[in-house]
Length: 202
Length: 202
DNA sequence: GTCTATACGGTGATAGAC
DNA sequence: GTCTATCACCGTATAGAC
Image (spheres, rainbow over the protein chains, first blue to last red):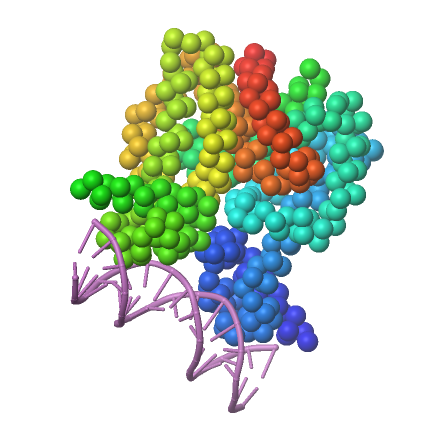
């Protein structure tokens, strides 16, 4: 039992690394087995198929990335600026620790958009919660539904894109200097908040 | 000769569609052959291998996406606001016609960052041109190099992200209403310019 | 140039011993 | 639970006829 738990965890750890690096179609069961220190047969013993294993990782990844937004934004204890600062900071920091996550999610989601609703439900991000955000947030901001959407899209765009576009941006703007790019991301946390706040006030 | 040209074009058209939809590892030579109305053997006759064929498409795609930025931004005939408006409008419109391009580029580039320099050179986007943009643009804007980078990253993020994040954004903010999302993108062209200009003036 | 046939390696998945 | 061995299939790539 203890050993089983360990093996399953090791498989999931390995699968996470490989799938996020290579995607569903690029990943090989052999590679996952190697990274987990076991053989292919055992993979199929724990998770019936590659697709099943992948779905577990995809759900887990979504659960890690998405719930923070609504929880934070709706918290009435904080001013909106505080909520926003906390969100942007937490979000960018989280991605810094998992820099390949956004590209992975983007790719797999665009590859298979039908899975979205299903995955969202699994992580407790159902219609009710979505509605809640769509209704409470405009009230908090004192903005129309449309304006609120613009702010949200802007914030998420600014937080996420630098990571998925990193190879290109680094080449074009940062002379491939990794340190400079990291520093830029760090400084960006404050700038994103400023840009969003100026959208709200104007 | 005429027929050969036709076949090659048909192969490239098919390869473009399939690769951009499925990516390198997800695409199948059989599927490309089917879409081109020929058989697998002929694919290998024209392009020795899958990788070679893919490289052609990748270069072609980069050539289509990237050169517009520097050419526009540096044009001294226009005010910066005019350049920016033209760029944002042209860029978003272009992506609207090829909505899967950004996710494709992001995925393949993150999968194989080493190819970037090589691909950029192929499309005439060499070190000299990059330096030119890095030097001329700050002058035009009257901003520091760092501030200029912020503006560029912001503009590109706001233009591109909505497309790659479309499935998620549509679900969370637009109740899966395609029309509403399209309208949002259309209206966004003007908003992006406003956001960028306000960054410059402050 | 274009086809059919086939080689050849890899890939997901299973059977069966321990 | 974990392994070795093996299967059936699919994928890229090539040979060779026309």
